[in-house]
Length: 104
Length: 301
Image (cartoon, rainbow over all chains, first blue to last red; front, side, top):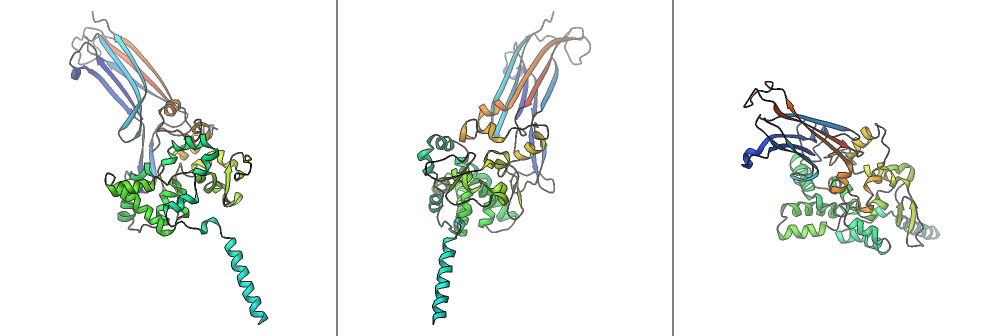
């Protein structure tokens, strides 16, 4: 499960320069064998290192982001994706907000 | 002479008695079709059409062909290269006891054949042999009788005994007007029933297999924190489709998501690297709250 947070400068026309901020939080587990070497095979995994989101728990991820002093319009997007297997992820929730800053 | 006749009769009687007392396990299938016929799910559809339809679209219905890669790796890498162990029925049951419980009733030769088909189906997935192997393997799955007979009494074997032949076990033991004998087993509505396979699997020889670890966090965290729902309460909301991580609606239902995006102006001169240190700095606080509303860890491996 992945939380992606991005902030884009909407005044910037070049898509490659639009991104002002990017952060990611991943919840996952690591299967290890008895030597604590990471393994993928079900027969090899004897223990896990648990970096998942435990049941009945709310986790807070907080970011303080500063933009440059001439930034006027920013779009913040926060999305939560679930990966059922390998690289195939599905976006479960998205929140987007446009912000305007007075630079005068 | 009389003694000999008496002895002969006794041997015959004993032979007939032993033959009649053979458990289901004594009959071993020699081919996949024979095995499928022994646990023919299509009969169930005659009366339970809707349930059968739901099950058909479930991952239980494709429990072998949807997991070919993992099982191939177990046979081709695990057994062959790491353990240097021959492919036997005992070994392949470490996968198939859960992915296709009927294989318990396959002959040694058939179980090995199934293991080899798994290897072919994955290794040669685009080739003719691979496709043919996959088509054969598609006949094996977690079928109706896997839960409603084969695994029905397994969590309380001492108390319930072995599953009886031709008996359909269910949570309410409903009357079927003679279609089949039914037996009530409350076990099937308990989480521990699902945990037989959806958790750390302990093979007959003691080997632990971790395909997933759901039951661990259910038992040790969810229950420990006061949770009391069963697996079935959430995962049977769509009946025998048993939706889980593959169903986005179910995933969304299990997760809470709340985001607060609060812009503000940061004090001039306090942020390094900006163009004008005398100006207020446009800033934002982004806070995401992600809640796990399920009874197990998210995600699960």
